[in-house]
Image (tube, rainbow, N blue to C red; front, side, top):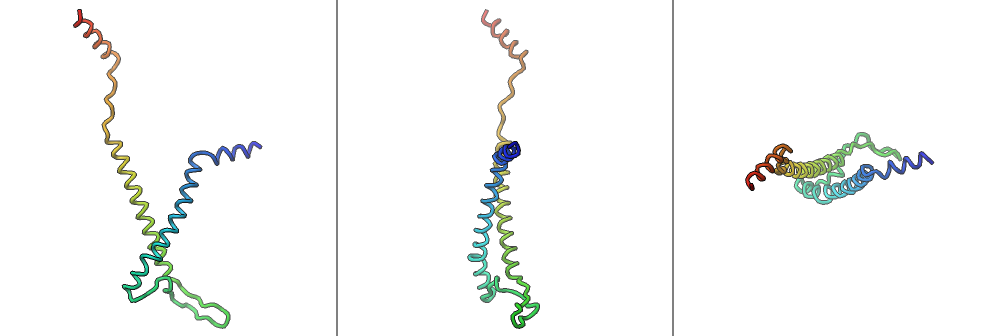
Length: 133
């Protein structure tokens, strides 16, 4: 039972749960970016290049013979994957840049002045008492 309790304590820590949420959101974000690249960005680029569909770009290394499939080098899919990566990397860069800007603003905010030393407070009280008398 001790191992189960230890695992439960580990799994319910804030960092582990936050990491799990980040991985799930990141996976969904990756699918969105892949769809954006494949369905929105690549068709116009292919049209500009003469109607080329990047996902179909490949180099045949060995032609199909009988029931043996052809050996191809699918560089079009690689190009799409590189564009996916660049978009994801840029989005992460922008998010980190925004977080760093917020962090800098918090650091630049003037801090409250430090409290005067105890001796100074006592001297101020003595001065005020002397002024009253």
